[in-house]
Amino acid sequence: MIDAMDKIAGLSPDDVVFKARRFRPEFVEGAEMCRLSVLTPAAGLGLEAALRIALAQRIAALNGDQILIADYGTQLSALEPAVQLLALAQGATDLDEPLAAIARHVDMVTLTPSKAAASDISRLTEAGLNNPQIVALSELIAFVNFQTRVATGLRLMRSA
Amino acid sequence: MISSIRLKPLTWHPYIAPVELSEATSEQLDAMKVTPSAKKVSEYVRTLVHDPESYVARTVLFNAIMYVDGGLARPDRELGALGASLVNGCTFCAVTHARRHAELTKSNDLVTALYCDRPDTLGARDTAIYRFARRLSGTPSQATEDDIASLRSVGMDDVEIIDLIHAISIFGWANRLMHVLGHADSGK
Image 1 (cartoon, rainbow over the protein chains, first blue to last red):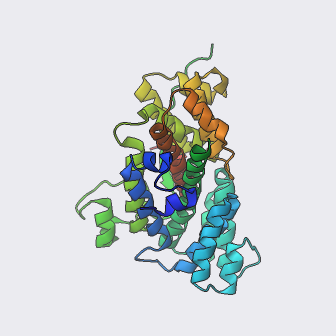
Image 2: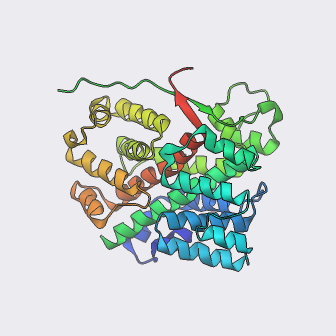
Image 3: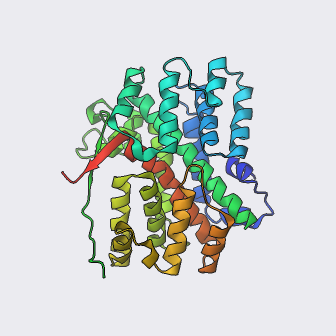
């Protein structure tokens, strides 16, 4: 069976890399559990699914991952998102709060994590996010950065 | 000859208040696998367990990637983790995994070379792994098919390369938690 990672990596069951990936069922199942836990968790902690998927699309774009951008774009469209969330997904910065503060944070952590400072977390708090939301947002940002790298690596293996 | 570097462990401190065990929900306690009577759970665990679902899923995956039997040798996974952590500027993860590499190999040579900015002194296998770790960690990734070819040329098979991709990528995740949600110092 093809999972979300195979789909974005372009792997089909007859690929050598698809089979090699199954040597590690822990990674296959683990990555899928992680994906669900950050994108569609049972407890959303006040961060709705459309916001999470819009952010994932934005992060995919910062990573220049065209396949992942399209994948999240399709998922977002299915949720009929508000105009502001569509703009957020497409990289806009002129957004209402707290989306503007969230977008700024997402861009910084994705592009230049080395520059993160205590003041960046304070900005999120000032924008109205509570501690569980700050952690959930951090995990979402970090997951998509993980996801695009695994997919990139698998694509390179397939074509090398 | 560069004198050998032995890194001292760092302590991590969160920017936000961790969950207090006395106030934790049953789901959070279950995620931490602790009972209310437990005294010592790290600040790192208590910070991330603000979101118990992602905490459990990520911890299970992280442990599999770094510790599962067979496949890529443990020091090579640590080198992947270290390369990512240096690119992402996560001092805490870099020092932690540099120390683990030194423990596993019983040598400070690789850590010394990297902390003295002399990656050119690494052997062929370490060079291929370190270079791929750095390039895959860029945003966007700078890794190419040539990097995969380099890994194959030093004898790595597909399972080992998949293990390495995961070790590097999971630090694209972990670094963005540790360096964003807190800071490290040499105090206790």
